[in-house]
Length: 219
Ligand SMILES: [Zn+2]
Ligand SMILES: [Zn+2]
Image (tube, rainbow, N blue to C red; front, side, top):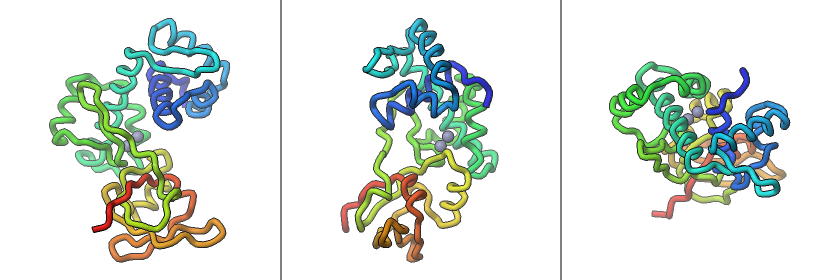
C-alpha cells in the first residue's frame, strides 16, 4: 500500500473509535500497516490542522472538523461500493478495494448522482450504514454471531476486509438482511450450527466473529 494520506488516517481513526472507543497510536499503526513513529508524526500534523486532538494517556479523538471529514469519506466509500455492485456488476468481495481507491477522487456532484441513481441507499453491500449528506449516521451493530447463544437472529452486516470470507458467505447465502437460527455451538470451540432458509450451515468460529447480528424477538 502507498503511504497513507490524511484522509486514510482520518478514516482509520474514525473506524477505530467506532470499534474500540479509545484509540491508540498502535491501533492506527496496525490498521494502516505503518510504524508507530510514522503515526506519531502524522498525528502532530493532524493536530496542527485541527482535525485531531491527541492527549497522552487519553488517546486520539477527532475534532468536529475531523469527524466531518471522516464521515464524508465513509459516505463516498459506501455509496461507491453500492454503485460498483449494482450498476457495474462487481462482486461484493471486490468492491472494498476499488472503493478505497476511488473514495478520495469523486466530486460532491458525482456522490449525489450515485445516491440518486441507487435510490438513496441506507447501507453498503456489506450492511454498513451510509451517512446522510448532513453527516448523520446510524449506529453500527457490533455484536457478532460468535458471541451468541442459540436463538433467532438477522445478519446486519459482515466485515468487508476479507474477500475469501465474502465469497464463502455468499455461497452459503449469509448476506445482510438474512434471518438465521443458531441451533448450537459444537463442543470444544467448534463450529456454530445455523439454519438458513431451511438449510443447515456450520460456520467456523473465525467466520462467526465477522458476522454481525441482531436478535429477533420470537414471533
Ligand atoms: Zn468497504
Ligand atoms: Zn462495505
